[in-house]
Length: 324
Image 1 (cartoon, helix red, strand yellow):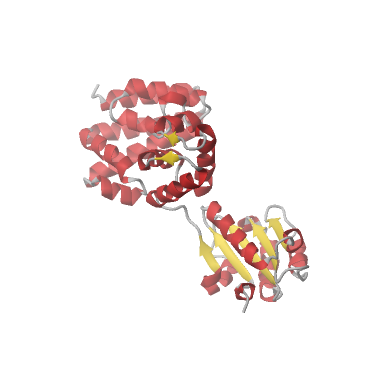
Image 2 (cartoon, one colour):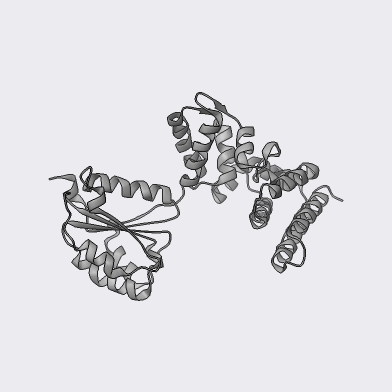
């Protein structure tokens, strides 16, 4: 029995980790399609403004030179209700020499189409962003492949700055390899220069500096972030997210390990957050959250320049943390 004979008539891959989904599709294509016949037997369609009849016709066509034809439908969730209904009726009729791969970020199991797909759960695979520790381990291997050295501490800094999306992280690792060159040692400062606000740091440093009372450093970093075209919404979100976690950590008297577990953080990143939360009186922490929500309203109202709103917010938070 060949490997291609074990491939099902359809697969649904879904989730936020697009990088792993794409690699899974590539692996399937490698097994099902003869080398050199990819242009003939592998077809890709997008669910946005798409005529489903074109996909059905293609999927019904026998492969030209491979054991199977692979038809990949991206952004499945973007299909119109009518197209989704037509696809649902086609699913039991997929030819034996075709496999249909559908990918999307989210699924709505309330819809009849998805209910039918999940009746065979072995064909439906979720891909979510990995936890921070796993992302760091994956990046460590990637650094070896790219030929540069980077410590776990610096990888933690990268993950804290960028997040756990493997596709974005891989792009940043490639940029870092080009920035440092072969056999280089990448440091936190290199990450700040490449994807942050130069020597001042990255967006991940901003709320942490506010929380420890380094208002001057936070204001300088904020100015650099705005000059580097970091969006005001992203900056405010980072500040709000950090102080909400501080509030939760203080309310539950949680340690760094528990905070890291509950909020998918690295323990090394949770430790300074917990220390800052314990030093800040609960009433002052509540005031900080109040200032953050007021700034959120001001940004949405567009009554003031956005940079003025953020500079005022950081100053007010700094004064509150300092007990002024």
